[in-house]
Amino acid sequence: QVQLVESGGGLVQAGGSLRLSCAASGIIFRFYDMAWYRQAPGKQRELVADIDRSDSVNYADAVKGRFTISRDNAKNTSYLQMNSLKPEDTAVYYCNARLRGVGADYWGKGTLVTVPS
Image 1 (cartoon, rainbow, N blue to C red):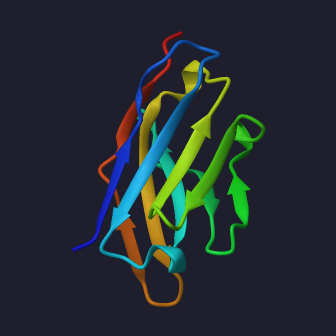
Image 2 (image 1 turned 180 degrees about the vertical axis):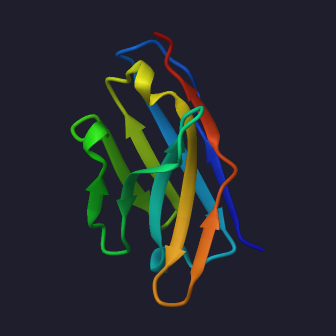
Image 3 (image 1 turned 90 degrees about the horizontal axis):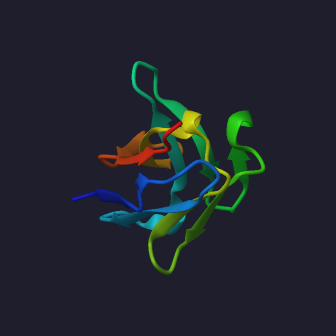
């Protein structure tokens, strides 16, 4: 059974930092592309950052220079370091694992990040 469990969300003041973690089980983690998405109230889910199995990374323009995605294949965990947080970063953050070419696509249940204005 595949599980993706996010942790690390919470309430943080503007300008602060948080590190989100996504612990994966039930998959061969090193083969998967990992990503973080977010969904703010009343908005569609959007890609925040992704990291493929070769450690190539990609970021949404809104978070470039502030967020860093990484992965630790030995721990089956991906991370999202979020610095200089802004109120517009408030959202539920979801972890995603995708295996190219076979249609395997898994989601965590999300963790809430709140940055009050």
